[in-house]
Amino acid sequence: MKRNLFILFLLSTLVSGAQTVRKYSNEFMNIGVDAASFGMGNAVVASSKDVNSGYWNPAGLVNLEDKQISLMHASYFANIANYDYGAFAMPLDDKSAVGLSVIRFGVDDILNTTQLIDEQGNIDYNNISLFSTADYGFTFSYARELPLDGLNVGVNAKVIRRIIGDFASSWGFGLDAGLQFTRGNWNFGLMARDITTTFNAWSIDEDKFAEIQGAVEGQNQELPESTEITIPKLQLGVARQFIFHYDYSLLAEVDLNFRFAETNDVISSSLASITPSAGLEFGYIDLVYVRAGVGNFQNIQQLDGSDSVGFQPNIGVGFKYKGIQVDYALTDIGDQSAALYSNIFSLKLDWSIFR
Image (cartoon, rainbow, N blue to C red; front, side, top):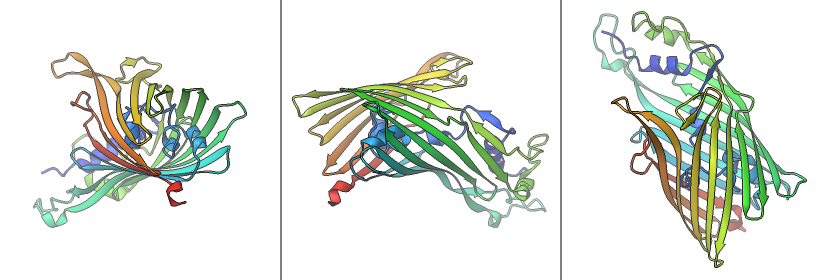
């Protein structure tokens, strides 16, 4: 009987090809954060101006007036995978700010059945153990107001830690840079991710690999190579806020997301691929918010061979009172994209509530 190949699959798919350039490497860092942003279809690169700007566009941190903290939790794949995020940011003075954020995407309590069959060919359930696979992203942000009125700049330094039980782990490092420009009620944003190409260096336990090596004849006979590179991505956005009768507000934003590789994005070529996203946020007296957004437009091939365009519609609500903001988002309404829907909750606290 053959041994279970789950761990071998993880190793071979995550760690193959010396200095391999991947379209989707470190994709957990591109999922997004903050339920309010998810509700707007992640179209927030121009309008983000709070603690979550450390992820979306660090230039927005300049708009902080006090310390802020943000927490978020989401579950994916029928609660098999957990996605968690926490961030803290504070102004240094009236022209600069700093932030720190942590992301974890993990699957816990995975059955390790590589030793299920003993040397005599007998099944021994006592040899089953549990392990976790988890991806961590640590981001350090700095933002500063530039001499040109309304223009802010921000940078991120990222540390990536990825772990597959005792079998393999990696460290990665990268940089992001962002700009925001405000003119009246208009906001413009530019976010460049992995501008130096984020580099991941993997370490594989050769003894563990040897335990499952050769499980499939002619495949996975050699130890996977240990480095990979994440290519840059670019996000452009424009937003405008409208105020009606002082009590009502409407924030609208449209973004374009660029990958410098050929993908399934709705606009794709060998040079770059582009997918748009758009979001709306309706607010009442800065207390109650209702949001809707759409994005992730992808060309999808159906089982019958025909092509269709999938997209991801989202909705959300939020409540804010004296520096405490609670947000909820439901993603992929009606299962319109290949991505699975998820319930997302987040909490944001402004230090002003303690003063």
